[in-house]
Image 1 (tube, rainbow, N blue to C red):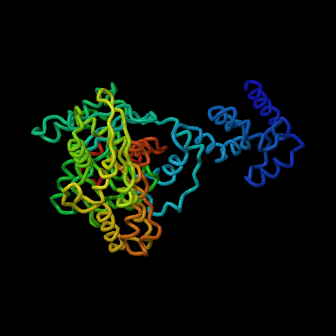
Image 2 (cartoon, rainbow, N blue to C red):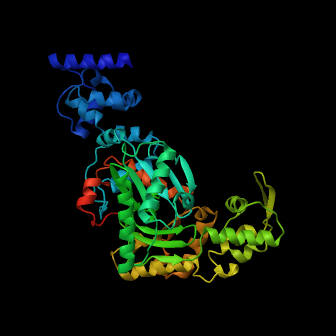
Length: 474
């Protein structure tokens, strides 16, 4: 590499005194295609373009960026988007996610309505900005479990039961939130004043009524007040459903969040939750499924020490049948070893547990089925007529730990096609949780690693004080 760089700098000195008279035909064609100004790269003019690009890829992004200071021709060649896309593809972040984020989310909120009308992007500039990002703390506090970690890490660094960290339920919201965030910062062993934070806002207060709006505003102000009271420099708070949608590389669609206590069906258009259209809520959540499996195990006189054992069996043995009646005639027996508990064998319970999402009456639950809730949401989206294109609500993204049950996405898609009108059923697709139970966390990671973060997404303490009633991201 030292020899290569020495040749590069020698070519610069040669360029200042005289220009080479010979140029390869391949480089001439490349210059005409890329509209390179009439100047020379010295001895490198004789190198074919494909070999030239391989050399730049080999020396790496830092050294390649330095070459842009040599002369105009070098600057133009080094700035080629294909080179920097290659460098970005070799980053920890998947290229598909990086491209989605930089083309759809970099302008901040509200999102660009027509993402196809994009300005010309310089991926060299984007790479440089992403390399200089300070990183951010990410806290995704779900109704059951909280995931937290550092945006530069590949995955969350910790996980804990939310209700254990939320403090005394009798104390004011601000005090509980401050205790919750302080506990997470202590576990991460980082100072609150050193980096921005991205927090997920729980899916709650679903209605578009004045009381629901007031409750959401109160929660929002408590979150910001608690964090700014801890000297956090900048805060980005985004709805959990929106983050899960981003993780699936979508900005519009219907998010089905199977939470700890209940399931929420959330319509989102260009990153904004459409509460006026209607958020459907089903009273069947992960806890109901775990409880159902526990009852079935007790009926078969299976001995287990805790609910953790039942949950482990649900996560490792249970699935959703594509055809429930047909599955009843099959031999579905399977076993799993639970640490410190022993070996457990399940049969019909494996698919009957997930079936209560589609047939709640099996568990004695009086609630709307999952497919009915999603179909109703689609009907409301179509009736609202918000855009001329109805395809946006045909994409359904699943999120939550229970949504990871094998076969759930395929079954829901099948049920929806049979339930909704033909003009809606064509084009429906159900996307499984892209990152399992941690989809919202990865959506926050996507935002916090944007080249324009934190400026386009965060609010500072000063901005919060001046515009405390501003319509912030949900």
